[in-house]
Length: 98
Length: 371
Image 1 (cartoon, rainbow over the protein chains, first blue to last red):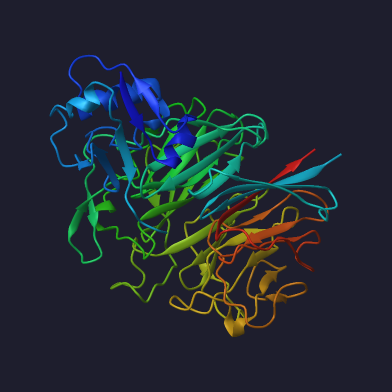
Image 2: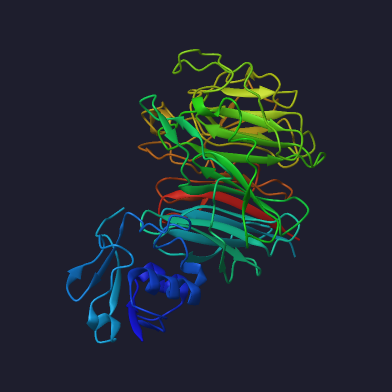
């Protein structure tokens, strides 16, 4: 079970609470977690990564275990604490106004 | 009992304003999609309970929302806008080629007859269509693949397709306008497109009367007379009597012919409305006086409408999609401002009152007339 925390806009869009839990098949990576997230919540497609290229949107960051994982390859294993559900995988909107 | 439902898109959400046919006492609902730029909200002429909304942010990109109950509840539908085939290039601000890249939906135009069919005008300029209520989108690629497209350049606000007009007498005919490419017409339901900019003159481009390259801000049509089009260009208010084949200037006695919105009275096809803005860099009314100008004879002779509007120290802007008319009698006119006011007139512009004063900056205003 992978724990995922979404930014406020996406919580409202997906109508979920502060944290959600996902069953992820195979190794826990950014790609597998986001694939599982978008399969469970199709309205999130395109809001975190591009529909086609699957590249992370420019103002989105991925944090876990006090690390910025945003620039890690999408198929790199996530920290063991995330894979075991001890720590959440954080999808973060960049600090910006407007 | 009849009434109106005003759909307001703002910089931080959407609002639904309703009133009976007197249009005096208003109910305000919202914000829907709080925190998002809502570029446009528009209802289906075929089913007023069906409404589409375009919400976007820099963080999360594009979301399209659909309501089946007149804006009380909403559901996100498909937000995948992918250009068909090779994206191709347009010109960037510095003149270099730049690939078309989808950024956001500026305008949603529901079909006149089918609630599940809706067109989307997007940035970078292209037109998409859904025939399943927004559950999937397909580009009508003939416009973006027009031979002139590699020379299209963005206006200051981006290279947006902001105007889509459907001809009620001819389902094959669609008008579209792009900043800063100009106006286009399709006579085969969107397969092929023809630039319709003859008669426009724009001093800010190398060839002032070029076939494309004009910064058209808005086009309006009265449904009873679909060959007559009115245009607010970057500078100049224009009119065509031949479905865009040729244009002539009708700015006449306006204090400035710069502006963004233009609209037509619901029952008088020669009565038109604009809101003059001082200049392309000073986006506020001349002399700090917020004045809607009305022509009752199709242009050139304009009358300032000021009753109820601020006539001193007013430095707001009114964006291109932020004016609308209802179909009641007498006709109602509505517009929203960058300061968050939505003004309404229940007497065709003779007098005005704010429905709301303190919304986020208004990006769009549409109105549904409910019977």
